[in-house]
Length: 392
Image (cartoon, rainbow, N blue to C red; front, side, top):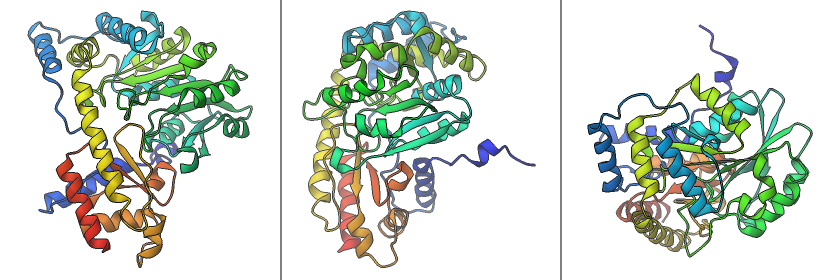
């Protein structure tokens, strides 16, 4: 049986692949520290779980409208108004099964064969695969630590062609953890205002996970003239420790959101009614629980920055947010026999130290590794100790 060319050209997620390898070793009795998955180790706050239980007991177990329950969409509109100073109407909101589906819906709704999508590198592993599943072509805009892994207006100008249909912006970034400042976004906006047909896909999923009093800014806060060509993609998974609840949402002009709704109506239809009630509780509450989680993430980030930079061959710039460490391991690769690249190094860490990390090449930046610190300090201390031991 022959499979489609589309699936033949699609890679398995590297983070999922490494997590599966780690689970296999754990099933064999190995004590593996898994630092591959971007999943908060905190439990979902109680008031959110209680809202879900209340929803079940009230009989909210039926289909909802494809684009989400009106009550949840009202909370999303209020969230944009109060937290982002952005105005949207209910018909400009689409609730989906996770932020990933929001991105998938957008790409399916607007991309055609021959279209190009600009993706700053390093990037979240699913961006190029989702673009390819839409028959379009990912165009990588390479960055490095000198610019904190962020693109500039000049970089975009050098890559824009008459085929460019979309730019994906992710801030704070997975995997680098850096945030686009107001000046960064103004610089990018000055370029994009000359290309009103280029859609800006603003992935804000790590919006609330920022450190050192850094400020999150959406491109529309500094370039409101881009409103009609920007789609904001977000969700409750990361900030509220709700990965398994699978609620994402998108906001944009009515034509784009309507097209995305049509795609969703023929794939998953609505998302889980109970999860929607839980998401509403998350968005309606204060962010005290989120603040506590972010404080812990920052402590873990400080620990990794201090300890990993003591290892010869590692260079690690402290991130502004998210819960990832994106680490330059060129020096390690050059110093260890039979290790030629970041994939080799990740395998070495897994097999010799029982520590699972993700190769940076999976994110478009070779000779780096990504460590998720969405795990306990105990696990991080154990992982660093093991890595130091095999390298000593």
